[in-house]
Amino acid sequence: MKNITIGLILLPISAILQSSLLPYSDWQDIFKLDLILILTLTWNIAYRNNTSMYWALIGGLMTDTLSVNYFGTNVISLLFASMLANVVNTKVWSNHIGLNILTSIVGCTVYYITYLIVLSATGFTINWTNAQMIFLTRSILVNASLIILILPIMKILSNTIYQPRIKI
Figure 1 (tube, rainbow, N blue to C red):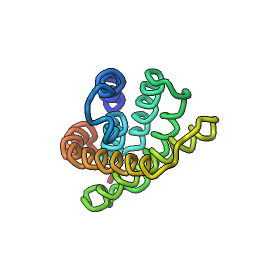
Figure 2 (cartoon, rainbow, N blue to C red):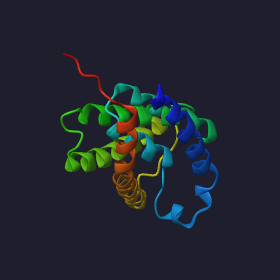
Figure 3 (cartoon, rainbow, N blue to C red):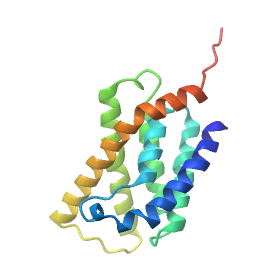
Figure 4 (cartoon, rainbow, N blue to C red):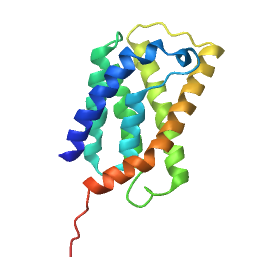
């Protein structure tokens, strides 16, 4: 329950910042900083419980509510990326830094590819030029780098919340 409470506090604030302040920054022409994706994937990597999938639902609903695109696009994309992070980061591999880096890169890639596929399936025309792919690659690398930088803080927070019970 604390997991969802933290999500209900952090994700709406991040969604408002992402939709109101970040579009006016200078670096938005170079790469897209996606705060909801960063927080959701970081929490799914750090928190070793399936209830972290609620972060994808909450963050996707918040982002879809404040965006101009079709409703549900962010929810579907975040859920796919979060499922990947939950499957890969089991209790055995959750502390492996190489796997965390790979999960963040692949999770961001899955998010953006799913997002573009859902948009194109709804009739939205997508420009698949080399410039768009370079922009997409830069966005994936920047968001994945920020996930790795925030991950130790989220792991500390998740370890204070989630204390596994010992069964004898």
